[in-house]
Length: 118
Image (tube, rainbow, N blue to C red; front, side, top):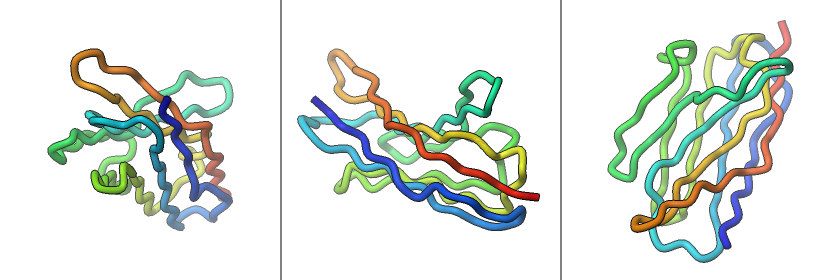
């Protein structure tokens, strides 16, 4: 079993910054992609950023140039540095990790609230 624990959410004014972390623990042999999703009230969950085991990254257009995803493979941890935050970034942020190679399994964090005030 794998558990993901997120931290770093909170309330921030527009233009501010936050850094989210998500650490995996448990029976982990190999973590492939690490991703951050978000879900705002009344909206579908959307992919914000992703990073492969080799470090290749991809971002939603709405966060390009403002958010940076990174990972520490030795610590089984993924980060999301969020700068120049906007009120429309307000959402619950979820980390997601794809674990295993032969039969990959998706694991999810519990979610952390990010609120950006105008």
